[in-house]
Image (cartoon, rainbow, N blue to C red; front, side, top):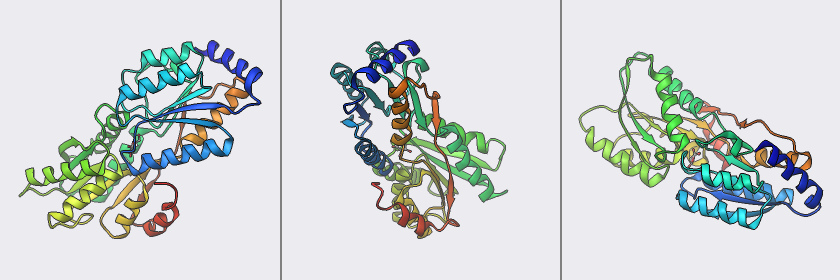
Length: 314
Ligand code: AHR
């Protein structure tokens, strides 16, 4: 793959650097505020750099993503951005892109495929995100008994797998903390609300001390469910989640949520930087370009964080 990608970069450099580069983007869908912001920023980044972006919304279906990649390959695009909905099942289509000498950059999620089938992956350390969330809870509850419910992301997606693992790593040594229920809410606000309602019903009479949600949108749906059940989210049930979207900061400012781990939606910036260097002279980027994961709590002026993010396309 390395050799063919290098040849392709040289051809592109020789033949088409004067004209706009064309990039196909297979996006998962619009399940969350974070995803919407990633789409907005990718479009903005492409426009600023004079890249012709061809956008395809897969509506959460891997088969739509595979079809979109095949279309991009047939069109002979200069690169493909892929935010893969699930981790497995990509080998064949990535091989097809590779055979066509089209570099693929993974955005925000990982795949279970040989890493020579893509140029690079831009994203955060998803296990670390879960660990940061779990460590926050361990510190917050101290020695108190804590029964946790977990809203997982899309089944089979790398963030759902890795954020679950990271949280478990963090609470492993804390015998007072136990995950009592865990179910997917598919990264959506509606899913988070519905599953939280079922958790509350199933656990009625038993105290739930904390909710760990794999993204903010599910946490926001769960907050609604907790309110409707007559409890105080953020007090009766601690809430920690991932993404740092504007709405979770509003919830934190209101005392309804406690902590979030930031995932930057600007995956396209580093992706296009890597592609531009590659197109220019065949520079091979690192296989993983890591973005930061910062923890925010109610002590971090959530209202100001909301104001800073509210117009960024979430
Ligand atoms: O892959 C990143 C995750 O996907 C975000 O945390 C979530 O909001 C999104 O849907």
